[in-house]
Image (cartoon, rainbow, N blue to C red):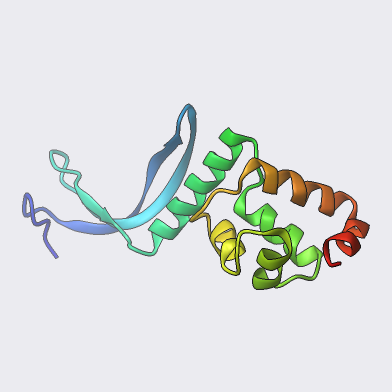
Length: 131
């Protein structure tokens, strides 16, 4: 396969990209097909890698805002033996809220973050929420 821009050879490679949110930044290696020509260097990152990019952006945003990252939210919910739907009904936000929080599509609010932190630390509070 030839580079569509310069006609040079292309190869499957990993490239380092900086992902930023506000003043926070992290570097990540992403797979793709890239031109080997010294004067071109163009390429395309694999579509499957964009899920990883979105996850990292969600983590950076949560870090910046001082709230739980999507994976931490999932850990708390599963530790409490709640489905995503039940967690949304119990804590608020609606039946799909936790699916959105855990995929990073929506950043958790500070009040929801505080509630989850309290319930994670004191699981006996679940009794009060389920009344």
